Length: 416
Image (cartoon, rainbow, N blue to C red):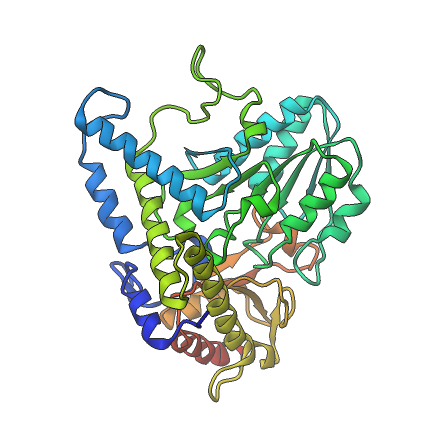
């Protein structure tokens, strides 16, 4: 498999909207991908097309049948992209809402015992677990993540893995530290002791940064937010295993037992997921000689991961004659400079300069980043480190080394 060349990068960037500028600020570097990735041009076109169609699904007419076929294709595309071992995909209000639904169904079906999670998790998961363990009369156990590495591993989970763990929640990648978790290893360790445990994964931050193989992970639920995976705002996507799909859940009386969607969903939302898969298929064909679509999609995931590793290395260790963040005396890096778990995100502090001021000064230099504060979103990471904030710099594969160089130039001035 080849790397993403400069020529290919230009063709990649041409497929996304607002790569170099937006209607509000004008020209800028977009390093706020963890808050929402750039949108494919094809997604914009598809959304407009379906927004104009008045017909609904499930009717006896040509347009309605066409909508049903679009949704069926998107579900099949998602199953291939994520190598789903059966189960079903469905849409909801948001990734957060879907995590609440999956966790509530798992807790109520568990019949007591313990729910095992970690302190690394986003509040979408932790809040849902706290609420529904109380309702279901379960114990909610949080494994402490490693402050130094910014992640959590099997070794942290293992002391708390017991036979009465009925539900487990795992964060695939942290939106604060940018570090990934070895979900497959954690899930396997849980299954070895409690094979019937329902395992639910928050994949929202991970989805844009590499492949997802549900068969390999061995879990029961996986949730993403498509606006963080090159699609658009306004909905979330969940997958549930056949086993979890059969558990009691919110549904209409006398309706299909396995139905998890609440009301009629937007056909255009489904269709944009097919656009994302088509893009990954194209990219995989550009970086590999694979002939099967599933293999091309995997190759795209590997190329995306490799390109982002290249960009974060340049950001941390420098490019050309520019010093990297690791060599700037007053700059601190959450998770350390050389962390193999990092996925396209660097969270930093500058001694003597507040995170808010750093973000403001980067904005003035035309570089979009974001402040994380020790609030309900990020306090679980920042408070143990005794930080009153950090700057989140989040990349994606369509960013360039030239944009990293522009960022480092601005950071050098700020750090001095």
